[in-house]
Amino acid sequence: MQEWMFLTNHAHVLLCVVRDPQARLRDVAEQVGITERAAQRIVADLVEAGYLERTRDGRRNRYRLHPDLPLRHPMDRDTAIGQLVALLTGIDIRSGDVA
Image (cartoon, rainbow, N blue to C red):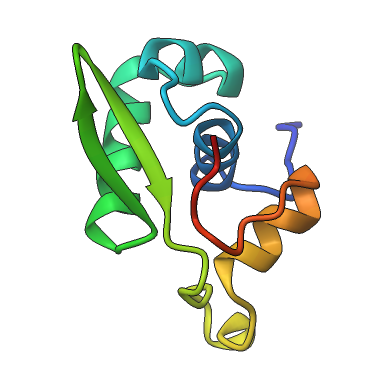
């Protein structure tokens, strides 16, 4: 029987990036238990959807959360992504600056 989890890989990647905005995707992938390519696709999804903003900082990327965007599922549209992240991490995300 396959194990299941409450959070998706998208949520786990987002939480890793929030905790460390300069995280290497190789390290994020290892923490989440997915391939580096899968982590890259998930970050690209989060950037394309507007939840994350990616900027270059030297040789690394730096990520910034846009905390006011609503969750994607129709049942959850009244909850902002920042509220969920704050609940799961204990980090106050109101400003979007997570470092």
